[in-house]
Image (tube, rainbow, N blue to C red):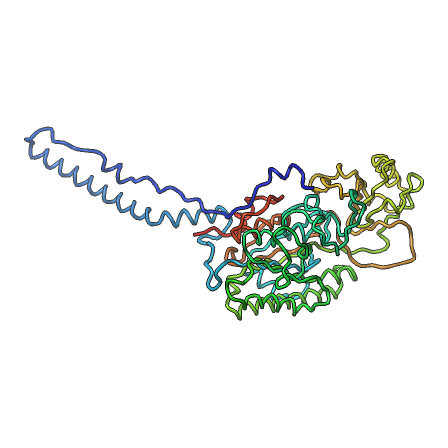
Length: 493
């Protein structure tokens, strides 16, 4: 379902240094002039004058030669240093050579629902160590819309927006076949694009996935080999997941996977239950930080921590919700009735697919009329669109899997069909990715990353090209920028 626009996307490549020309040889210019005698006979004063001129020229030439030699031997370092400075890197910072491993390795670690700022809710010594010695997105990682688990995890590993990789929500309908996608759907037809584990396999490299949406799907050159591909089981202890990843580094060097994923459900689980500001979140952050510490300690014990590129990130943030922040669709009845059979999803993304005989434009017009009337509770906090009229920055229209009508609610609000007696407060995500509360973290540590560097926030579709650049692979067409890796990765010396 990737549109024709995909044809103009660029493939990623390794950033290469741009050699600068040597400065012109000033000595050659000075020595290019010739002298000749005008006569075989000269007066003594003329001889003295000529001797002084020659002596002066020789001295000047020698001085220029010395200066040129100094500039020549320092030009390469100066050019490289200026290149680093122009790219935002510290002077003299270059890619560090691998000390022990025979090839680059990227380990992608996801803490589900880790909202940007959570790193300050607990001591989190391991996360802070990674930040201090790696490269961090200064104001967090920007998710794609909708800010949900499956669309974002799959965007991270394909570099595609959901409309192009096909996973447009955690649950949705296929209008062509009439069946439904759920988080247990592993048929290849749902999962478009080329995820990183498939890209690695296409280049003859080994990949290992310990839980990641889409990794269980047998597609292209990726067969989800039992040795390196774990089927999702939320009951597997976090310690076991970390130790399994560490065990891969005990294999013969030629068998160590080049690309690996590690997924932990926390702190998303707690965020949904109690919202982002509860003490349970502090405990959950401390818990996943301990797992990161366990991972780092295991890599250090094997003497390979500095050789591994560890990318720590989350898929989305979290915002508090409560029952007083609800829009009820049945309050729109004076303008239009929305049958439950039309509604695919309620919150935070309202997705409506009216039957063919009903005009989506008329539904949108009547709904917005009612919401703006002041007679629908919290009506001003819901805006309804035809999907093609959504803000283009959302990239959420180029798929028939996306419902024809999309409603976007304000931060922290929910949509329900009708009032109920249930009263609860908790947390949610899925909102507009422009909300700061939806941002997550990005911290990368490795031989191609500068220590202690901050980079501007960016969308997670850029990560695919970043990983393929580190591994020196030619990636598949995607929505990321081919020039992005050079803005994050160190130059080669």
